[in-house]
Length: 246
Image 1: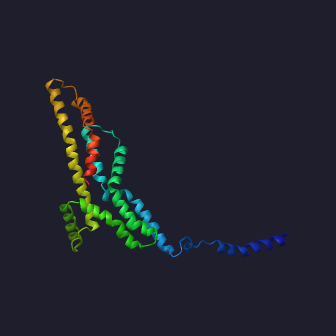
Image 2: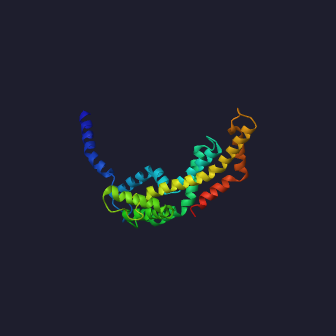
Image 3: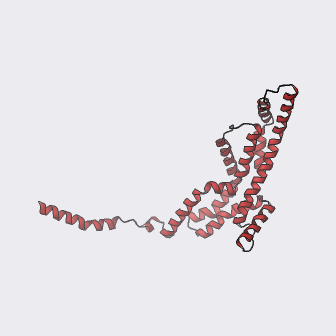
């Protein structure tokens, strides 16, 4: 009995390497015929994960999101509401407005770069250039020349190399961001100005009526909310923000 058991163990041990070799996974077999090598596909996956990890930053740096969220923040501060609309609502609205404005850019990037790469019609190097090009054109169309020239000069002076070429991303992206911040603050000033006038009028009236102990904001807040509703403020503001990119 013991001899038979030993023989059985020996047979299993001899067959184990053959079974392991039979079950080994060939990465190349997972790729379509005529496709790229397994190492190339692994590099693609690593690159995709890297892009996804910095996607929020890319969304803020290269799209219209910055202008939208700054303008909506000024609106909330101008009305005098601290938590209404909530941050989640403002960010969500800014995101959907960004997707609406950037839809043609996203479509060009997909059709010219990402789809051909997934179908193995172009290389990774060609795909990167074609994916980035629509965003570069969008930023060039909305960046201030003064801001762009500033970062081009700074790039050349800091690295002791020739100034950055026009439209180079290392100077275009930060220039576009500060241009968007500037325009967002300009729009925010125009949004806050009528609410400031309402605050001044209410403060003057309460002082002239001798109501020293009554905070002007108690009366000004409902007046500002009513004013914003009567002028159809959401329609005017959102329409103006979207049209600023047309």
